[in-house]
Length: 350
Image 1: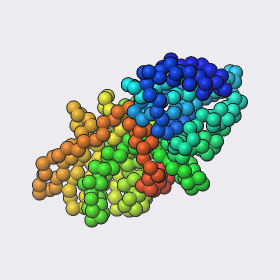
Image 2: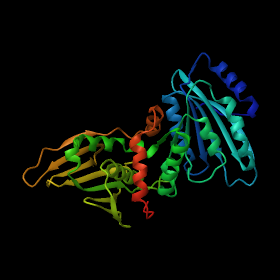
Image 3: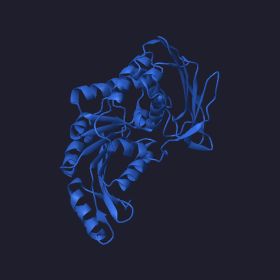
């Protein structure tokens, strides 16, 4: 990123033009879409800035990064501009810092700087279940809204809010944690590729990484998502859930466990173990020395098949955001999973 130039809001475009004139022999200006980012200042802010910068370097876009400060003693509104990009291709980065009553001015500052005729993606890194004066105005500007369920204080309230937004606005919605577990959905779909095999599932045990970081502390989300997705696809009906994260359905059982892996992303799924009615066991677990590979071992009382490996996508920083930006529409599986999550989390287990 080039050095940020602090400017008055009305001089944003003229300052960007000046910067580009200076860089005209070094870089080409490019933009595929508008990316609006809402962030409340916290210990995750630098992490979010980092992944947004990595995304903009890979897919040039105009970034409009909004940071609000709920603890500021005096209201303020600051704007700055810079250029980001590696090699000869780069794009605009507009920074808006705000607090107090000046938050109400943000939509009016933002609107003139959205490039027309290009898609608008909104990354909302706050909890959508909490009231915020910028939420509705920014939603109305966006073609696609990407949420970060890591910020949700209560996963049940979060899922209800996302379903409500989808119903009332029909806007495309996405979720970073849903993208992070796509590889595991693909693994299970490849193993249980027929309705007959699916209906034989009897128990499922999901293990996730419980190693916290300053940026991630809600570590059960991906496990809940995977269990909710499976039970929604198979129309399981929940009968009982315990604080020990054991779930009893009509004929099936589910469990969520944890382990700590130092080098793996927090909350990332480590293993999925499944047993079926015909006495087969499916053990799917990451390989500690090559944690982006999953070893799949299928066995029964009579035989044990040779294990094989499945390559999960490497968990590069910002990859889940890239994935949800380039996707189109809203996944029907995601919405159905959220509906089922309301059932699994009815006792606020998350």
